[in-house]
Each structure stands twice: as structure tokens, then as C-alpha cells.
Image (tube, rainbow, N blue to C red):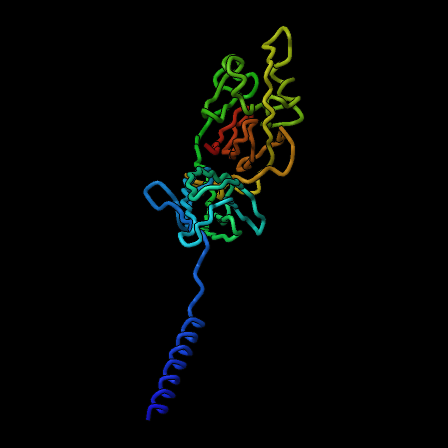
Length: 296
């Protein structure tokens, strides 16, 4: 009986050892990577977000060494990836147990991008977090002026010069005093007929004697680009308070032989785009009634 009891004891000990070894083999390895998170308090962006172009977001980073490994943090990298093209915003090296920083990031162009932040420790172990950013295009608001009566070069009642920045019509004397603001002028020429042209147009300079040293003698000739628009009068009338004006296709600064219901597209030297709609002419044709819509 003693021998049997002894053998049973050996089997029990062996079973315990086997059980212990089996348990050790199934234990999951410990996570030794550092930790990183976006600050989530008010004013900070920490998750997918939609903003407008030209806006900023504030991103805060909190990173800590792994409490088990105790390995210092050695580098931080922040990257914006747009259309699979990465742009490194931050790439810093250090040797600290923790890392915290705030970044203000601006977005000037519409589209979608992904912001990622990665922390790495002394053993080369790293942790990365990210969120998506959608940037909406801002459509410009529209300034509208209807029923503008313009006269030709010799009209004593109505002005011939127009400033779209303030939607103001000027006679030549006042236009000379505000020539930096003038975007276009109207005249009826012998060969060009009803014409709208920029101050830089050779015909405008000639008709109004803008370069005559004995006349008004302008020094600023804004080179507004003007061309026939791709829209008609009905589409012009339908434009509301928000509208994206198209780019010009040419490089002309004057349009001749205008007719009722023509629509012109223009772009000023300050990059403002807009439309001019021809409403009508008087019987002689040396007076014109127009509507102007321009981006603010």
C-alpha cells in the first residue's frame, strides 16, 4: 500500500506540473506598445469631422510610455494623407516618458484627407491613431445690381464707368478720381458698336482719351478680362445669393457688337468674377441698361 500511495503521489505532482505548463503556454503576450490619444475636450477635434475650406481645427496629442516596459518615447509623427499622397506635418524626436502637444491646422482647399498621429518608443514599438476630415467648398455669395443705366463717352447724364466692388456707376470725372476701382466702361463706337471694355482696352483708352496728357491722363488701367458667357439671360436671372462663377476661357478685355440679352463673364484684377446682362439700349443705342452680378 505504501508503494501504491507513493506512485499515486507522483502522478498527482506530474499532473499539476503539466497543468501549470499548459496554462503558461496559453497566456496572451502582454501589450508593450506606448499609448496615444487625441484630446477630446471642448475646442479640440478628435474624430471624423466636416469643415469648410479656410477653416482651422485644433488637434491635441497625449502620449505615454508603456507602464510595463517603461521604455521612453523617442519620436512623434503627424501626417495628412490626401489622394494617397502623404504630407508630413510634424516629425520630432525626443527621449521622454510622456509627450503632449497642441496643433492648429488650416485647410484651404476642398476635398477629403486623413490625419494620422504616431508615437514610437525606444524599442521601436509604436501606436497610431487617425481620423478623417472632409473639407467643403464655400460657394461665394453674390452681389446684385439691377437696371444700371450707362451712357456712352459723350453722355452728360449717365456715367460710362463701373466699379463692381461697390456696384457704383461713375462719370468720367469721378471715375478719374477712383480709377483704381474701375472695372469696365461702356461706349458706342463707329466700328465696334455697343462695347464694354476694361480700362486697359486700347479702344477705351482712345475713346475716353485716358492717356491724353492734356486730358484726364489716367495712370491706372485695370485689365479686367471680359468675354461672352456660356449662360443665357434666363440662366442669369435664375442666379441666387450663392453661386460659383466659372473660370474665363480666354484673355480678352473687350466685347463688341453687344445685343439685348447678351451675358458677359468678367474677372477683375482682384480675382472677382461676375456676369453682365444686357437688358436694352435706347433708340440711338448710345445708352445701355444692364444688370451686374458679382461674387462678394
